Image (cartoon, rainbow, N blue to C red; front, side):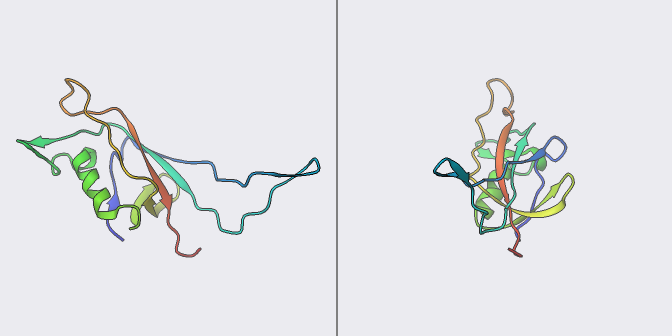
Length: 131
């Protein structure tokens, strides 16, 4: 395990995405959907609000306001990529293990905003070694 995803924790909501279901097959007018042969894995979308780019001179500052710092988020992503697991505090599931389901692509800073960005989404997938 490599750290805790604690970004924008006061404004973040983890929304569980609808499960992938098999597409129905048509048998002479009768639709059939097979039961999945692998366990369901929860996928989440975390909308991060209030995130900001910080700069120290000509370099990216990753220490100022750590929970809302995009530079620190990018460092966290680079350390974990899409294969390492980390803890996430979910609103009702408690502490769960997750991985990134897609690369993190934060937006550019808004004009004349002192580094603030629009809210953006990060995709996570529940990691459960008991599968």
